[in-house]
Length: 116
Image: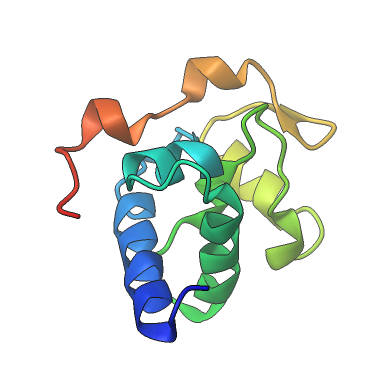
């Protein structure tokens, strides 16, 4: 089991990655977890983002599941996540980013290796 301090540190690292996702791009929970060296922790990334609801500047709406589905939209309220993504130019139909791979941003390709 993860201690509160380690969990808090992991959450902070998640937030630092999510802050780097450019407007008009998306990333997956799993890609963030893999970048942080914790490839089986996609759900923990989601938990961290749910906890970020009160933090300004964390663009959690840019994080979707591996298929491009808006699985985190319950954090924002009905239609808000979709509206935010569409305002950045991403096409969304039936709670899914259309051609998600075209908009995918992989932190392993765009950020230096994390300090673990």
